[in-house]
Length: 241
Image (cartoon, rainbow, N blue to C red):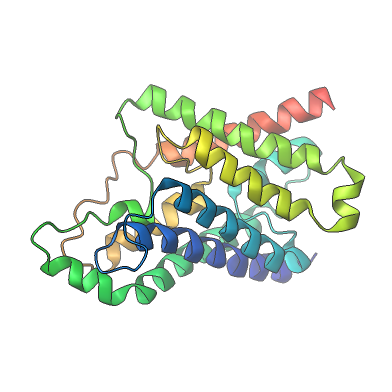
């Protein structure tokens, strides 16, 4: 795969991922949305479908990593780091683009939110935040949850039937749903540095009324935790399989 194909594929795929993922959270939390208060299960499936759509779209161009933790895990396992910067650059650009597109889709709801007596916080639409703020516990959660994502993804590559049938991405999408349902409670399961950092930058820069803080003091955890988890997954996979 050429650097140009990899970059373009990751931009498009990650933008779709964030559009669906941030979009489902906006649908559930913003006032005057038809999906208002639909709940955590809907959010988990929305993110899973975002992975499904984004990864299938990007796969012919880049393989559909959509996540620096996945890219790092593969690089640690294979020892091939040549295109890692291209993958991560595409993922970051795509995450920013997807967050902007989500804002445009829900523009009227964001504007109406400013006029409500009890305006809804907006950072959670774009990025994660812990239920209990404990940096050590939050970091450990993100590391473990990311291993729960990346290690199975690496192992799926050994299952010949998944590759031949084209269902590997579908299985990964359900894996993301499962992580959200099982491990998402403590930190909101970033498990993807680009997914959290790109939209957080957008939240900081966009003119969203009453948007509140972008919580940059916490922002390092959903970046560092998944990167450690991705690297650990590569080490474990390389040693065990």
